[in-house]
Image 1 (cartoon, rainbow, N blue to C red):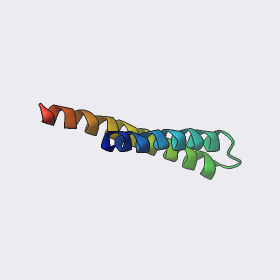
Image 2 (cartoon, one colour):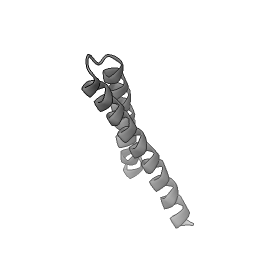
Image 3 (cartoon, rainbow, N blue to C red):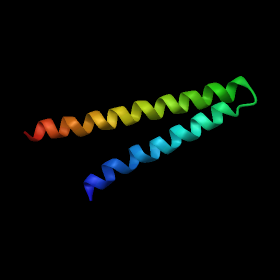
Image 4 (cartoon, rainbow, N blue to C red):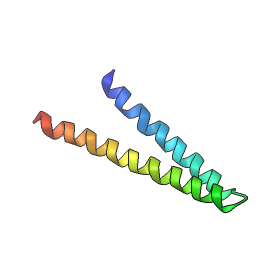
Length: 62
């Protein structure tokens, strides 16, 4: 169950990243455009860190 839980939050972050890009593309002013891009970049950084944590745990097990 813990293995499934470690992949749920990156999937949700991917969905949030997509929503951030949608918000940025349909923004009426620059504040929403920049905000959407910041949400996207934050979610992508979180996904890469989750991948890194996963492989760090695999390396520590060996």
